Image (tube, rainbow, N blue to C red):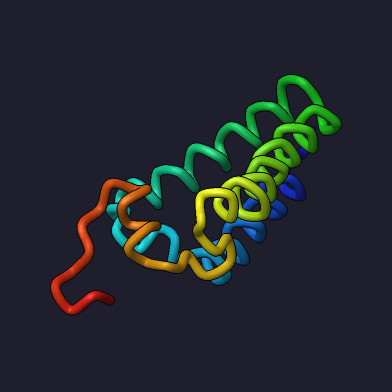
Length: 104
C-alpha cells in the first residue's frame, strides 16, 4: 500500500505545529526534536503499510487530540497560556528549565 499521503500529512502537521507552537520547545535539544519527527513519520508509514490507512488516520488523530487537550485545557488549568506559554516563569518551572538571567 502506498503511504505517501499519510506521511505528507504528518509532515505538514509537524511543519504547522513548529511554526505555531515551536516556542514551547525552545530549550529542547535539536536532535530530540528531529528524532521526534523521524519517529512519527516512520510509525505512520509502518502502520499505513502493515495495518491499513484507517488505522494510520487514528494514529494521526490521537496525538492531535492530545495536543488540543494539553494546550486548550490542561495548561490553562495550570495558569499557563496554552497559545503563548506565558507567564514564562511558570512554564519554565513546569518544564524543569531555568529562566535565563535576562528573563526572556
